Image 1 (cartoon, rainbow, N blue to C red):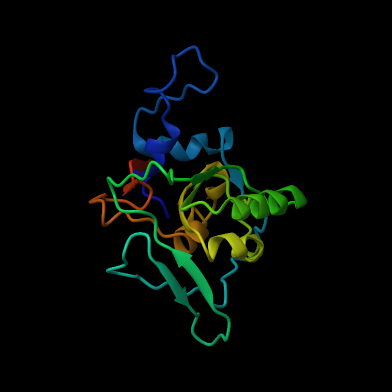
Image 2 (image 1 turned 60 degrees about the horizontal axis):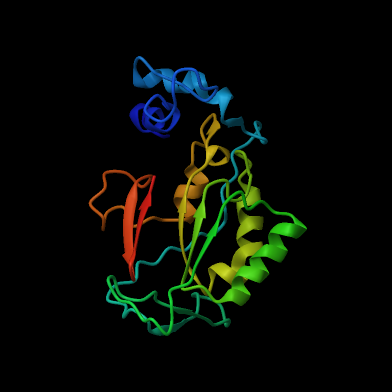
Length: 209
């Protein structure tokens, strides 16, 4: 479960909007954030049970060389995949500008799949998914289906993600599915939470909030 203060940092918009704005929310204390969820977050679509994926494999990779292509095969599978590390921080090639995919509110529709294939054809060095990935709204099986739909892109292009309101639902599922599937480089960037991180590649400095 997300700590009160971390949720409050997301819900409290008083530093971002004037008090007359519709989206203005100011909290007197962190635990008030839970009473504000209905304004921007959603209830679980599966209130009778909590689903757990059979297998979620996570492997930390260290010492990878920027710009180098790697071939890998998941344990227990005969399939192989390739990905290329983004260029080194601070590097620039005027003959080969850096190409990054930026995508939000992805969903799981025919349009989502078509956009995914289009992004893959662009051959970006990395992709940023900035909230509302699969619209599971607390129904965990949709995360597995989303992963299968996005496999061609996510298996070959490095991704960084942040949460949106559809990743947080009331009950016992606050961002749990996202946290277990899409890890962030928060420790490497000296952050104290997976919900906030930084990452540098080429001339780009990414701040995830």
